[in-house]
Length: 303
Figure 1 (cartoon, rainbow, N blue to C red):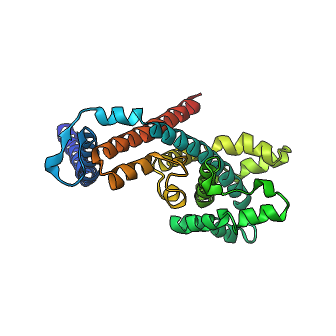
Figure 2: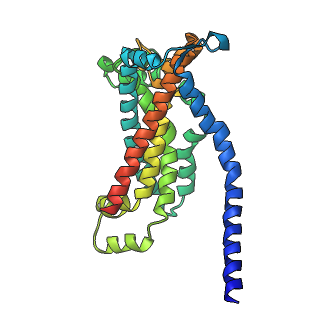
Figure 3: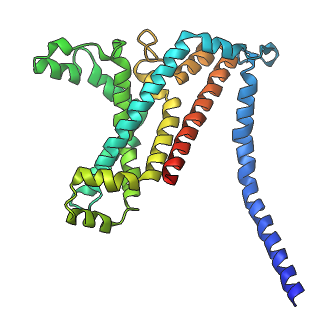
């Protein structure tokens, strides 16, 4: 009986293992076709000189595309821009999203309305956001310059998107406006994991808003912070649409991003191999920054 029971348990375990592999197989096939094959193709293409049209014109050049990329001063400018964009958009969106979530987490009258209101920019097309901010930044009749003239600050009036000193910050402001609502939703969901009893105990002990934020809320939202930061990192590295719609990488290449360099290389200059090299660097940056954040979060949890 014992041999039969152990044999049947072994068969059941094998059947469960086999069924698990059968469930995973379709996903692995999809990943293999649409992710791993595409990644391998891009890496391979980055080693060639090609106009992207005729396969017979492909010319193997090894790492020359990467050498040219790292020697190009525009690449350094694009890297600096994306790092500035990443730091300021992620941190500001996290802070504003968390504050909004804390204010709207309660079941006060009208909280659902304001949640929906603050989330509206996330649902809008980037084209709509860009057109709105182009009207805001318009140098002659735009709302920003009109306001500055109205309060007597004519010295601050400028062509916001045409000035290399302000163009990048204008793009950052537009991105913060568009995506802060998404961070708010993440933090509202994260706050549901913190017991209300903890907040009530803090209030009884006399803890104010900022003390509760630093001692209870912020440490308790570790997984949410990680999610928000990783999404922000990946989103920053691949940012293209809002930059292209507002400045097209100008003025004077002041707002070039890796994605705009990629578009110009492939679509305008027919440099498919060089564009593939930019793609590989973008993927490497996303993986590297995400890995650093995951490692930091793991060490913080173990401490």
